[in-house]
Amino acid sequence: MQLVKPEIGLIVWMLISFGIIVFLLAKYAWPVILTALDEREKSITEALDSARKAKDDVAALKADNEKILAEARNVRDTMLKEARETKDKIVNEAKAKATEESDRLLKLARESIQNEKMAAITELKNQVAQLSVDIAQKLLTEELSSPEKQKTLVKALLENVNLN
Image (tube, rainbow, N blue to C red; front, side, top):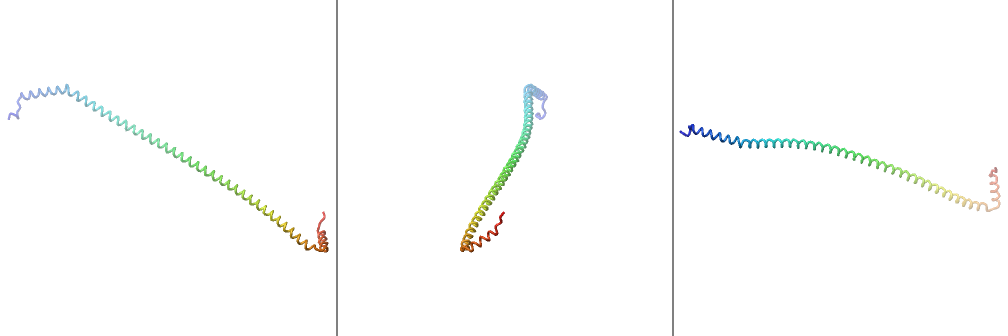
């Protein structure tokens, strides 16, 4: 049972060796370990700060992107509105020109029809007059074949003539 009961000498030597190890660790190992822990803490803090800064930068970039997208949408809407207005203007101008041209052509067609009508009426009158003269000539030739008929016709005509 000696192993269970340490002697006082063993305890003293254990305490002395423990003290030496604690002293050596305190003098040489603890400062290095604490420095490493401080550096690790600083690097973790810096990494967290960098992550926060990156997160803020991403949020700012996202806000800027949203703003740029909104401006692009506004510009697109403005351009579409202007394009629609231009299209409507061109269509209205084309309609006005087409209406104007159709009115002009209609007026020319009416004038042409009127001129043709007048020419046809004039020609018809001329033909009727010519036919009337031809018919009258034939009738007179036949009726005035005798001298008595000629005298009677001349007397009737002289009676109908009004002298001013």
